[in-house]
Length: 144
Image (cartoon, rainbow, N blue to C red; front, side, top):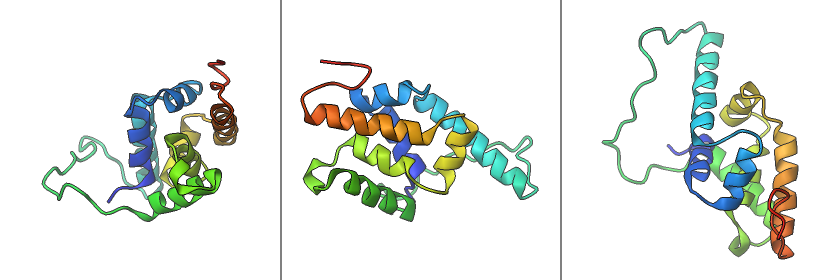
């Protein structure tokens, strides 16, 4: 099942310059997000009294069908992202990033908290970047 943390990893690895710039402004890239998700996984297991120990994280199962179903965290992120744009055809990775970051609970908020990321500040920075794009300007970090 594809969940919001998978989409966040995909956005980080997509090479799309605006979202890459926004994520890097808070020290995130695909590797740091993957590390934060790993820490969140271990932290959640520890809360349940389970330790990975030597077992480690299971390897991905590549035998599944090529298109796994979309999970509820992705559907909710899409709804929030669409709310940030108003029109479905205007949806961009930055809108989806906002939708992911605005999740009140879940894997992504816990992982980013463990990584020390201020999600509210990143949402605001992303909104400003989107507004700048709409007006023909770059992001805060890249004025045109």
